[in-house]
Image (cartoon, rainbow, N blue to C red; front, side):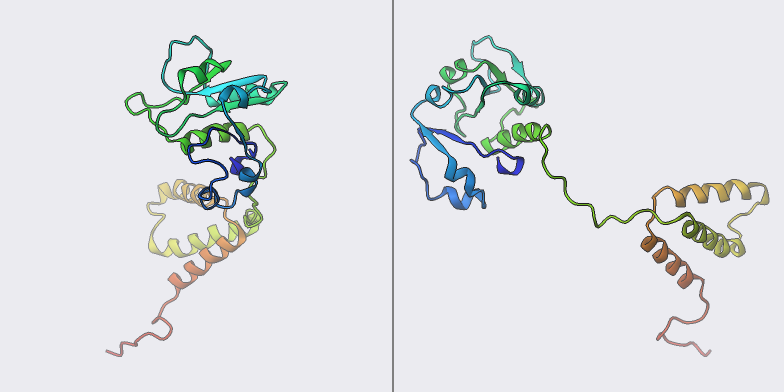
Length: 222
């Protein structure tokens, strides 16, 4: 929940009581969700103040209600006036028919009908993620991404390739030399190299172009 900006959790008759000492370690630091959790005796009590209630289920229970995907439900929730609640059932059995009957709509994840089982954590993360896409959550920083190298440096790299390839006959036959050079240019300009990457490639080309033994390597005098 907290990964995607949700912190209000309501529990209905927790099997092991509340607070539960096992919940802290399992929450991996999301203590605020546990501290603010509210406990209710029934589902009806838990959603009494909510104007919009969605029940997550994949099984038809003889109740005729709108069926929404998490994506559509998230758009609705963001625009809803009044509180919205999303019901999740116990890990083993899911929601009871009476619980689903309380909801205004059914929320179902599009899933392989041959294997339609999701555990509780998976269901929560799918729904929470769709909701988070409509909120102003922080985007991971991109300061480590350098801008593309100036054209001058890129031209130097292309020229360096040509300088080493020319004497090797790479642009032979002459009738195809222009096309081959153009293909090479397109290949080298496509990735958007930054200046460090261009410098590294130039260093590689310089090392490949050097003649003589490797620095510190054995010398063959035969």
